[in-house]
Image (cartoon, rainbow, N blue to C red):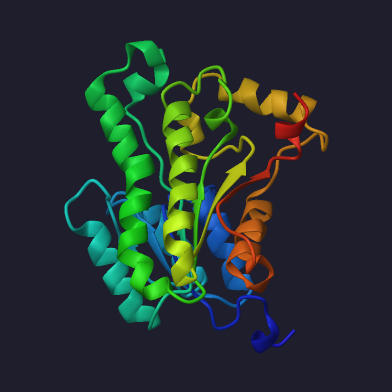
Amino acid sequence: MSSSSLPLSGRRGLILGVANEHSIAWGCARVAHAQGASLVLSCLNDKARPFVEPLAQSIDAPLLNCNVESEGELAALVQQAVERLGGLDFVVHSIAWAPLAELHGRVIDSTAAGFARAMTVSCHSLAELARLCEPHLAGQGTLVTMTYLGADEAVPNYGLMGPVKAALESMVRYLALEMGPQGVRVHAVSPGPMPTRAASGIQDFDALMARACEQSPLRRLVTLDEVGALVAFLAGPGGAGMSGQTLYVDGGFHAVR
């Protein structure tokens, strides 16, 4: 297949939140690159760079630091990505975080400060990213974020992140409404449980993965490439008529309980 006939040939993407080779953001980057996209990647800080830089180099993608809690870093990231790529056609927001004490505790015991930080990093950062990217995505752009089933139902040990992800999915619908007239499509992708660094902070996560394997129609976990393939579809011509959705890639687990 020639590079010009690949689904994402000529498309330019910014992917936020690469932590290591097991992160969902990396799966999205790897598939998008294989489908012809030119990319800029972000990681949290210099501490994460040794784990991410070899990955970025393997797909010839610039790697930039971005901590969404640091004033001006998100704006700087978008500006540098646009300068390096000459524009943007799709953006992947794969960022979620909550203080560990809040994540391991009951939602009823969560603090206002901890809840606010989790919302700022995991949810409101999508709104800020959308505002910064809107002028560059206008016409045919796509913005995708990552959610989880715990947004729709109470999942044991998912705790504080459940309400935060519920807010994120609502944010997607409102962004789709507000950005649609500019030709921008917005989606949430909801993978099943996967052995990522972020998931390692959830108590008894192995039990959650085992349950998914036992009860999902496909009787297995999904892969990073399968998540990346869905994101690539949404960013490409196949997803041109879709917006405002939460799409599951979880082996059918969401449909059978």
